[in-house]
Image (cartoon, rainbow, N blue to C red; front, side, top):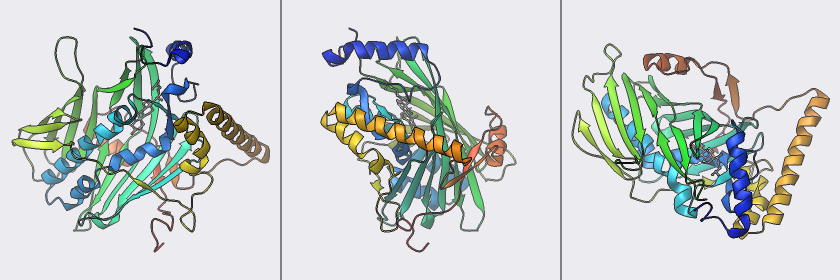
Length: 388
Ligand code: CLR
């Protein structure tokens, strides 16, 4: 039944929202949606999903061989998927529409040191508003790990589902004890958002993504529940060693399972691989200002009243506040035009092609062959790096 999960009073606005999704392709983020589907959290907070199991991230730095390292990267990567793609369902019953970040919106966070895993820090910045692009860096300095990436989405509508093509990539740099570095290129899966008609959207991953580095080309294939067979959230990862690319490994490794539950190694070894049934650890938001306070562009400050309105069901206040913020941002852009200046990112420099991406993409035959990227300027706020 259409809209069964939608509050009765919002059914007609849900139907018109779906109709406009079907006709507008590209960017849904700025479309107005009915209140029941709104999330009080901005997309600038989503990069935190990469580190909700900080001990698995840290383990990459402890690996002794190329094979151990690539397996640690795969395990950490797969273990993030449950949080990235099912956590809104679990906490609020369905996928929700995140707040559409303002240009220059910031999010700072940390996961404290515990059991020798080291402290891990995060900066995310909205580096483009239209289309929305979020750049981020996640670093565990004591383990020599740095993840730098950016995310954008291109959406279309097909067969009653929203198809989300993720644009962007991430590069994980691992500093080895010898002083040399290994770099891993991570690309992102495609999403299908189902359950729209009913009013309870949820995500399935489709197609594939890559993990390439340290002498390995890795492909992760995603499948969902088919009409006749198959299970939701299935994946199969194949890691193929590249002859002559350093790394002592010679055998192919295959891992199969369910990314939101567990998986096992089926080729090149055997036994359990990952298991995400244990609780995850959410990021601790940190203010980026001098005394650890949150500045006006920090996401939880900027959207404070909108979020409160959404959480408390006061949608009038939420929508008034949202309009106020959007108008303020429009005014800023106009002022910049008038004064001949332009907005500048606080933490990232855009480059039009990324040599690390190009080399590793070529090796794995990833398209497009080149992609722009955002380079972190290294300027951590004092609240995250007191010694700076
Ligand atoms: C952002 C990057 C993260 C993974 C991730 C998870 C959920 C995605 C989100 C990304 C992008 C925006 C997204 C969202 C799910 C729904 C939302 C596609 C890829 C769209 C804009 C909202 C659709 C509205 C329906 C829910 C009605 O690492």
